[in-house]
Length: 390
Image: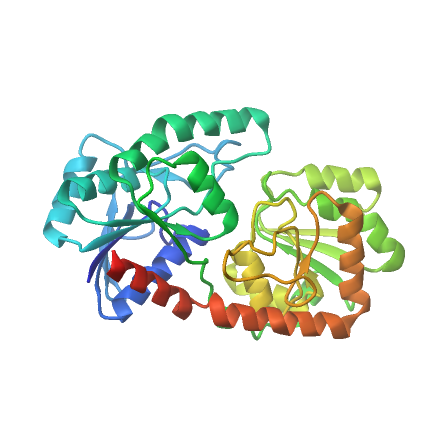
C-alpha cells in the first residue's frame, strides 16, 4: 500500500500523538509499504527528509501562542493561502491508497480530508484528544469550536475513526455523529521494552528519597490531570505510611495541587521534577512503589500503560471497559477507584505499599496485558489490517 500519514504533531515535537504517529509510520514502512508523512515545520529539522523508509515533508507553519487554553503546548498550524495547493501537489504525486490522519482539529487533517473526498481515497482518523475542559468557560469555547469548525469538516469527508477507548467512542458519536463512515477499536500503542531495566538508585539518590515508599505520578499537570485527588489523599496515606513521598514527574501547567498541599500541610511529602528527558522515565519507574495520575475519569493513557509495562502497580479512576474489548480488572491487573474519592484512593495507595506480594502479582498481570494487547507490534498489525480493509 501507499500510505500517507498526516499529523501536525510529529517528532521532534513531543507528546503521545507525535510518538505514536512516528512509530506507526516507521512500522508501515518496515512492513514494506510506501509512506509519506505530512506535518508542520520545526526549526530543528529540515523541511524534507528520509527517515527509516519514510519520506517526511514539513510544511510552513505558525506556532499557537502559549495560553491556558492551549495548555502552553507547542501547537503548530499550517494554514495559509498556499496550503491546499501544496497538499494537492504532494498527494497527487504520491497517489496514496489510504490516508491515516491524526488529530481531528488540525488544518492538515482538514486539507487532506478534502483531497481524499475529491479523489475517493479512504481515510482513517485517530482522535487523540477530546476537546474537553473542567473549566465551564473553556468548555463552552471548545463546544463552539467542535460544532462550528471540526464537525463540518468531518461531515464533508466522513473518515473511519480509530476508537482508542470508550470515552473516545462516546465523544465521537456525540460530536461527529453525521460524519462517521465507521469506527474501529484499536488501543494506543506503547513500547514495553524501553521502560524496563531502569536503575532505582538513580532517582532515589537524586531526590534524596532513600528507601521511602514512592507514589509516582507521571505526565504533565494540566486541568484534566490536576493531581488534586492525590494531594487530598496524602494526609490519610501519611497517617499509615509516614515516610511516603508523592513524586510528580512532568511539566506543571496547572499548580492548584501545590497550593492544596500547603493548605493540608503535606507539602514536605510532595516532590516535583518538572519536565524530564525521556531517558529518565525508566529510572523513575524502577524506583516507584506505585503509580497514579489518571484520577478524573478522562481515560487511561500512554503513561499509565508504560507504568504497567514496567511492572509498577497502577491506581486509576477508569472503567473496566475503558478499552472496549480489552478489560481492565480491579485487583487483577490494575487498581480501579472512583473518581473524586480521596479516601478510597488513599486506601488503595496504602494497600499497594503495605502488601507488596499482592502488588507484585497485580504488576505482573498488568505487564502481561500490555505485552499482549498494547505493544507497538500488536497495534501496528491492527492498523495495517484496518488500512488494507479500507
